[in-house]
Structure formats: C-alpha cells, structure tokens
Length: 126
Image 1 (cartoon, rainbow, N blue to C red):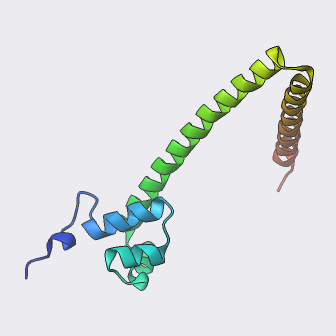
Image 2 (cartoon, helix red, strand yellow):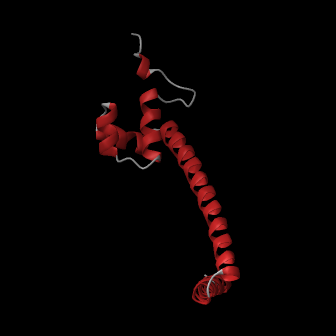
C-alpha cells in the first residue's frame, strides 16, 4: 500500500502534517486551532506530543528557535530603550531627566536585590 503525499516522512522523521502542526504549536497556536486547520483529531496531536519522539524533538527544536528570535528582539529593544534613556537624561527637560534617572536607579536596585537573593539561595545547603 502506497502512502499519501502528506503521510510521507520528512527529513525529521515525521509527516508533513506533523511538521505543520509542530510549527504552528511552536508559534503559539492552540491544539484545537491546529486540529481544525490540518484535519487531524485533537487526541492525535496530544498523542504525538506524548509519545512520538521525533515529533517532540522537532517541536522542541522549533521552540528553541522561536525563543532565540524573541530574545534577540528583546535585546535589540533593550539597547534602543537604554539609548532613549541616555538621550532623555542628557538633553530632556528637568522632569524627563529626573524620571529617566529614577527609572534607571530603580532597575539597578531591583537587579541588585535579585543578585543578592540568588547568592543567598546559592549559599544555602540543601
């Protein structure tokens, strides 16, 4: 018996339909949405997530890619935000300078608190 085109295995060891479902799921679509869009039962998708190692591996690799892209975008936005704060502190009105400086100091204080907690937690014996 010959397999249909959407049942043929891809380079990832899963079907084209599984690839499309994994891609959509990694991008945040719901299982219900994906099931309807790809004509597959929700229970099948849950079964893939629970017991199909190749599907799970592909999904996790996609999820890592998405996370890296998001981190890169956030990093870029953070650099732009810092630049904006510097501009405000250097050339804005007194009120803008005060707000920018206060914001920066508050963030530094928050970071110092997190670092102190991490050190405290790391020093405790379990």
